[in-house]
Image 1 (cartoon, rainbow, N blue to C red):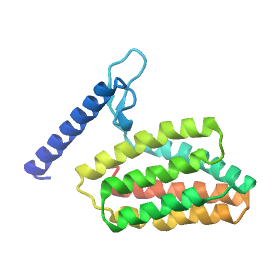
Image 2 (image 1 turned 90 degrees about the vertical axis):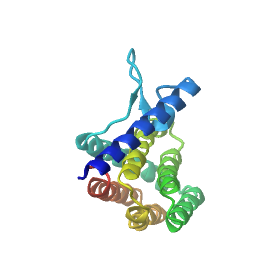
Image 3 (image 1 turned 135 degrees about the horizontal axis):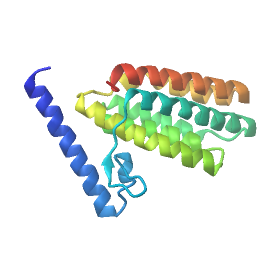
Image 4 (image 1 turned 60 degrees about the vertical axis):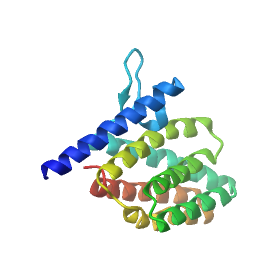
Length: 194
């Protein structure tokens, strides 16, 4: 990697950290800052850093939580208009090649799925995983100068989630979401995680 490219990445990372810490400080919420900053009990604020094993574990737990959410939604035959709207907004963001919007819309889709069953524990623990993960995703994608094309390839998998839930078989919906989440993990590890 050329010195200029390494230096540019370092500068981008510095500004992302500075912006995240500024946002956190201005809100008095150093532990949230839109997922960019974490703060443990009795510790100072830190910019989120995830290693491959962390990313893999997050996706595994996400798969279980989102799979459970999908199973409950299918069992209860809940309407899916909000998921379908999130999917169409994701498609539009990919079409306009707006990386920030794409990552935001993907996050919106998954948070929507986590919240659909109305179980506050699934939503809370899911958000604790999804929001920092997508903040980290955006930081890495911007540092790598990615466009929206890797997410365009995942649109079909998001549609599979909706289709599996619509089929009405709770077990199938859960298993499809777990499988699709593993596909998302494989893509993340190839595209932006390194």
